[in-house]
Image 1: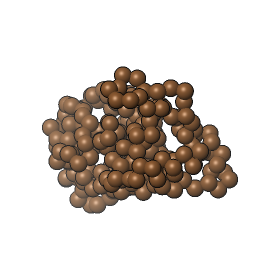
Image 2 (image 1 turned 90 degrees about the horizontal axis):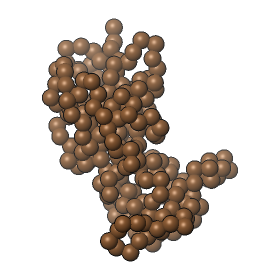
Image 3 (image 1 turned 60 degrees about the horizontal axis):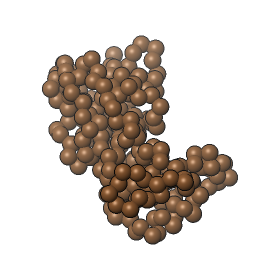
Length: 221
């Protein structure tokens, strides 16, 4: 008999740093070690429901972008027994960063993508696979907006893409492309409480995107 688990790869972006949410396990063979938040698949539970349940239990958050990433089934990925895991990845807004510690965790923390601690089992491989997929998807779908505050500046948007893609983008060209897609709604608001000159705020128009998509619009960065 195979044991099945789900693991959630939860991305966030603080300022201009892409981060991952990790938990320090509180029991079992992985006690005291860092890994992705996950759990066993319950009897009669779908993978999607298990991933959503685990996310809610670990973070208290329910309304987030959550997508199946990959199933990891190497025979020796888990010590002593055969365990197959299906990984999901989630994107969380900065204002949703409040987290709660699950019953079987000692500690939870956000880590910058390039400063991760040593991870349990094959979780490093899961992170690498998720990062590869995220880089691809942000170029072809506007999922990056799920990592931003609901109201954001063009600089925040640029910083996000640079953090994910790990490369600098040409500022005028990037802004021109984004505005040309007509997916950004300029708000009659500016930043507050900043030391520098306050920039204009925008929001992402999901309805316009869905409408454009039905007409064959392709998001391409």
